Length: 245
Image 1 (tube, rainbow, N blue to C red):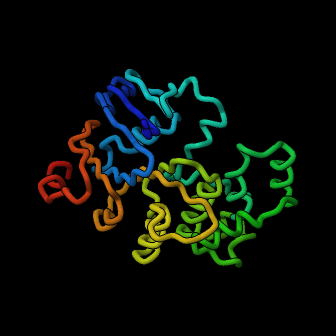
Image 2 (image 1 turned 180 degrees about the vertical axis):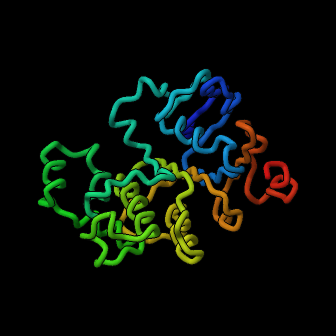
């Protein structure tokens, strides 16, 4: 049985005549916990944007469940969710409204309207906010009123509430202290997590903190838009890190 979720073949991306990604070949299988590491400007964010279909590669082919991205139906596209580095929260809405926005792709326009005017239920949103260590006092505050670390966790809760098959995250531990970073990492990797809430089984996370690599089963190193290594985490050595940093 082929359990490949995402399959990239010879992916290249050019922007303003600059080669950002060069002939990327990558398979992400169900249950993978992948860390993407590399310097700023190495191509990590661009690769994430191609993985979730936000931008199209200049050349090459990308498939999700053996279907070309361009041919995916809306319900198939919803099986991928992303935590963006810039968070993409709506500052005028409350934290709980922002989390509920993660459900908009599955709900009706009536739900969207009720969410906008604060009439819909926030129970599910609150469940995911609590598991992301957000206190009840934060729920009804607008994004403008909360701290950077709280915003980070609102964005994470908004992604988790979508209950997707694969979670793609771009530096999701920014603005979090070391203890919270490790907790959120273990949550996203679904490590020893016992709860009725659904956490994606497959994760692809870009990060710059090498101390957070435990728990991942694969590490991909990228430099200058090229994948230099794609190995099991237990095989990662200092010379691998020296190669990309």
